[in-house]
View: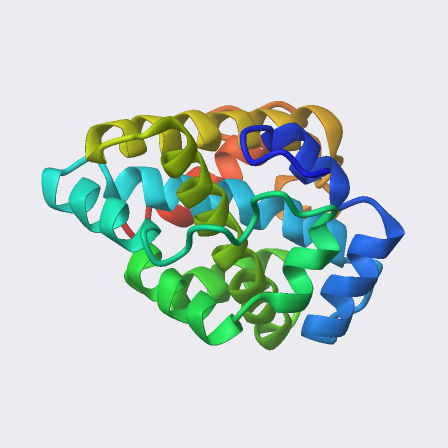
Length: 201
């Protein structure tokens, strides 16, 4: 059972063959790059959502958006169940709102990884509804208001980044960042996310 309040478990599910197959069927992206790209996508999207929620308008907007995504990750048996039902058109809308300039984010990831823009866009659009569903069910379970949602998003963002950095080797996915394995202002996953999002906010 996937827990809506356990980022580490959710990200660990992305290494399972069944999850990779489900995401591969949804996106058409090669299985060899899917787990790492998905693991980067989760903290990237959460960091953007958390950044947007720093303002009152952003908090209210996120809290309102979550009302439309309740029940997507609650009581599911596995991540692949979520992927099979995910709406990528909805994912594109979420990304446009979170990043402001979705194409710019895709361009930067493509430049650093060599992965095609279409593949990156498909994976991001598949992950975004799952992330909002997770936040929505957490909001519903804990009765969070807009401020609570913003705080929880920040907590999830930090947990996701820590989990990705500690448990997944992504340095070969981002060759320009190779040689660093810890998050910092200049290297590692933290540096990657910072460099991508720093050009948007």
